[in-house]
Image (cartoon, rainbow, N blue to C red):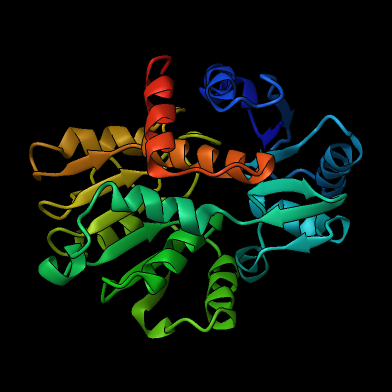
Amino acid sequence: MGFVGVDTAGSSIMRVFPLWADELGLPSRELRGFDIPVDAPAAAYRDVVTAIRDDPEQAGALVTTHKMRVFDAANDLFDGFDPFALACREVSSVSKEDGRLLGHAKDPITVGLSLESIIPADYFATTDATVVCLGSGGSGTALSWYLAHRDDAPRSVVITGRRQETLDHTRLIHERGGLDTTMFDYRLVTSAEAADAVVAAAGERAIIVNATGMGKDRPGSPLSDAVVFPRQSIVWEFNYRGSLEFLAQARAREAIDSLTVVDGWEYFIHGWSQVIAEVFHIPMDADRVERLAALAASVR
């Protein structure tokens, strides 16, 4: 199986995958990393997709960081996509079936499974909490897609972006998917101080998410160290490794603001287990995910 990312050797999955392969009875314990720099030219993505497609020993791959770029640069190399991939114009899972190369966007599913492990099913109905999603890229778009389809949906989701074109792209995805865009506030935020103000105005018990990639793919945080989080809010860092400045900022305010601080470990577990299920065509129920999570925790 392949792993398309920026620094794949540094991921915990390199230690976890062999254990999972044994548990699941996969045909190989090898996970091959394909490292592509952020903002690489289109040819780099096409070369990786072609290599996976043409190698009979590659069952498929998980894509992180580059999900939208893989779709934009190499969508013509695929034989089909699932509805989420077409709507979100991203690929997080590459698989093969009957000689066909297929692309899937698993993030709306995996981000939902992760959030469901953090909050109760009636969280928004009982708290009237809002959501601030810092980042309008692939992960942020996936979160917004899930929230719009959730039975217990928030009344307001602020999505921030540093470029108007990324916000416009997210809005287009929502419109193309038939979502109620009135629940979204697409906010252009060009500085950490401006992002601080958005967070501070979110109201008590808000869910504040770092979906920017900052703190993993590149150092830094979308917020400044002067940020004050709404009281009793849930602060969710999508990443579990890297410099994690956003996570450090939240933990520094955890006791002061009565925060619940969550890192991206659960997202990591669901993200990988769902893609492995797709790549190797095996069922993935809750009991199996729990066993995989225990194995992963043993080498975290």
